[in-house]
Length: 215
Image (cartoon, rainbow, N blue to C red):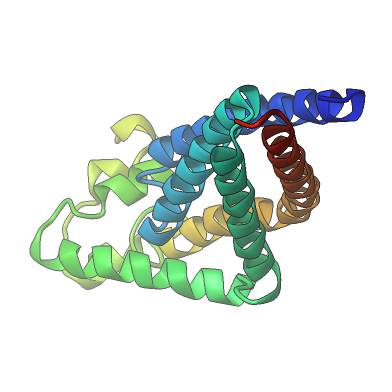
């Protein structure tokens, strides 16, 4: 293999190592955010993190072994990641209005559950530091004599209860999560294009090398 191919291999393996770590990081973030974000977003993070990690491992193995099939598969996985990223930028845009609507629907489902199963809102109220669907007055409206302990910081009734409703607080958190994902998409697109071109360049080199030496 020539000097250029050797440099490309080192370049890709360095990025693959970082990719593997970022894939594991996405999986860790999804796990930590299980009770803080919509289920669809959690599943998206798990899926994307898993694909990035698997493709990074496959890429490292294919490049180190100079295996045409594995490296080509790695290249096509990068192509799939690129398409997903571009769809996220141009097709499936998450506007603030959409995110707020999504958050409101998630909270409404929990609130409906709270009406028949007192305590269902506790996890939202603890995580988002909020009280009620729209405000603490929601509990008064349904005939509750006292606010749940989860409406108080550290469940301490001697402290002032939260004033904001969970729709507002969860919307703010969701907007931050989705905005961060969108802002980093363009960086991911640029890196993925570079890696994909390098991967298919190596596929061509490995194939020529195999033909030349008859294996």
